[in-house]
Length: 353
Image (cartoon, rainbow, N blue to C red; front, side):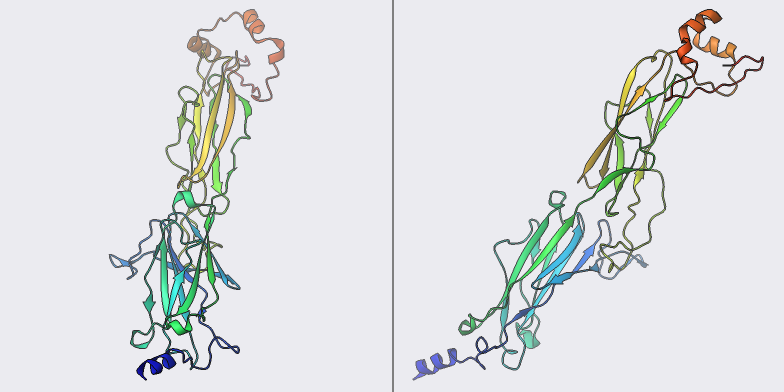
């Protein structure tokens, strides 16, 4: 008789939960937090008595059984998934929460064990938490993980929840040259004695990632100097539109401007140089490149304040015979080159240099 009683108990389902329109377990929309790279994650929110940045809630967009989240490389991301089975018929039933093997979870992420959140440690409702710091190789992709909630009682195995998926987009930088960056492959003339200053400037148009500019090794003209750091700019204090729920401002992503400074010296006349620069985000995700062609014209000199014909002649050991100077320059050069406009400076005795 005992065996018969056990069978009857196992087959008893309160109110037929899976037939006749009965309610099934439900997975709630996910919630998420994100801590920006290099931010403090101390739960107390204090560091030496000062308020610091830490994990903050980020927006989750839900559409049916799918949730969408956008994060960035290097940020600590936590996604929380809750499930429950409610109603007088099911509130005492234990449930569990599974992750589908396909697509699984993003590489490098950690899924917590099941946490039972009901009274007396009853597993209804339940929770699992996913922790992940996206790596540089994972940017620009959507990483998906899916879940299903199941009753623990074998007799209710046919009563699972609908699946729910979380799509996590790892935002990629969009780099572009801005400001006074010369057009790619532009040709400029830089005469002897002139200081050529070229200032490539790059930014991430989405304002998410910090960026930098560097010269391409081996392409700088001889003796050229390049700024050691980006031009100082004020940090943005506005919330980023991708994460409007963040409780603190995004780190500064105002772009980077660095300049090359170069003066052509005597002996480089008629030579050509190609200076190239790369713009990158500091996480090494994306890179863009631009180049500038430089030509050093002959028989031209940038006059400096205080120069005289005598001082120029002495400095460069020029032949002072005016007929030879005229023949060397040529009538075609009198008007100057549009890439290096000629400027006239009167000298103290009335001559024009």
